[in-house]
Length: 175
Image (cartoon, rainbow, N blue to C red; front, side, top):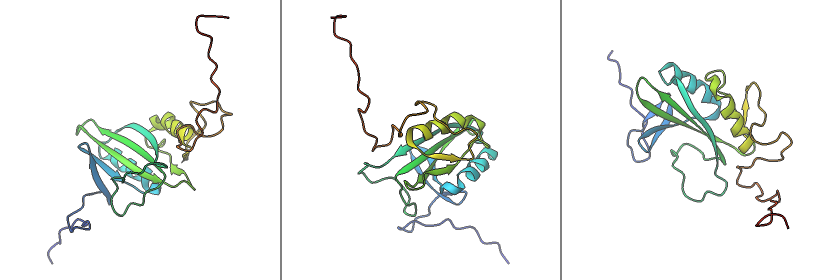
């Protein structure tokens, strides 16, 4: 019996759709972007590390609360309010890959990448501090930029602006 070739999945127009580790891929500014469910994030990053993407250059967050434009997501990816974006680099292949993970507002939790890339410790703390996304399994998830007693997450689109009154000195010195 002859071996069958794997046929890539097709999009709605019947065109082959690229995948990476079984997850849909899009392109942004010439860079591959893989859209991964949050429960698979650490597994995908681990596999990519083993395939040569040995450096995690960034972990950041996005709040799409007031974003009105259409988002560049594959049809089978359900948009959520928050997104965690992970940038990986392969020095050997001279290539970057970006991972985008949709994170729902009512359960803003993703697995920590600390066990795969220990250098993500501070980046995950920053996303937690600014957006309120928790990284399950992080060794010390606490605030890194804001005071420990700070209420809220300043980069959330619904965070009230101007809650701290700014004190200005009089122009030209003391009066």
